[in-house]
Length: 198
Image 1 (cartoon, rainbow, N blue to C red):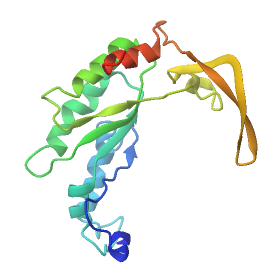
Image 2: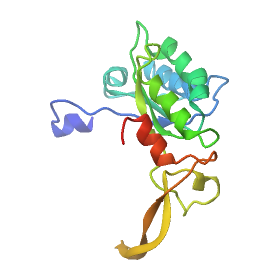
Image 3: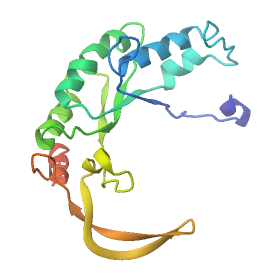
Image 4: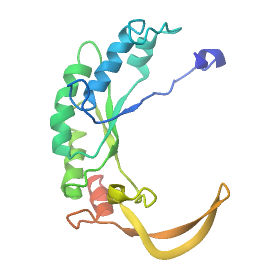
């Protein structure tokens, strides 16, 4: 409605809401939530939403939506749990809904082979809907701690480069050092290699 009110024309942007990769209603992880959302948009006036839309939500969904999810599962399990099942629900005669992974990184396996396997899935003819994934994440999150510290291609090095004032709080900017996965492999090299970089 906001676009209509403001007279927005041309090539409209695409929307997503990244779903959790959790089981829901006994349906496959991530996929169950996507399926329930789609069913809700088909009839938003039904309970429990009982919503009367001003615009055609289903038409907007079919033309401007992309499904997405986050996961720390391995490529093999992502293929088994969602990619192998996704087409039946969202890539058929009724609907063609693309899919991507907003945050992807399994800390439980070798990053090199896992990211290569996931990259291969982006061009696998069995998954024409799969747009790709973002590797999670660039640097380690020391502020979160715990298991979150295993994510990130780079760790902080030993050299304080500068201080930075951000919204009244001063932060130290550190140099970056390569981070390793649990198998000892260099994460940045694994990602660069899988994506065809140097």
